[in-house]
Image (cartoon, rainbow, N blue to C red; front, side, top):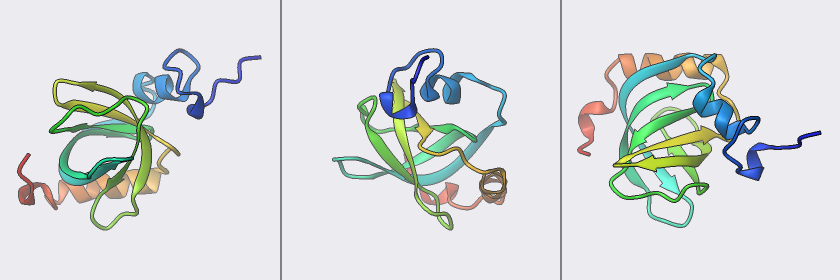
Length: 124
């Protein structure tokens, strides 16, 4: 029996990371809104979230982020959401949430970004 879990941090079929970034069976929305990210062990920064799913997100990073580092996404009006950096490439990074977003939170974040909140306040 394969006991691969999210905490195993093995990016392969059957892992949480693989499913959250590659399984497109959950809604994945292109978005554009400002937020902040605080990776474990380093100073937080302002970012623009580029896509969002129940399992994770892609955002802009001013510097390289270490794969498998934990981080917290803060969107105004929502509790901070923990995740793990799964990939970084040329100023973009992907994160798998520690716990899948529930649909009501996902929809509320989409409504937040559609309202235009936060995107004009950030320079990335």
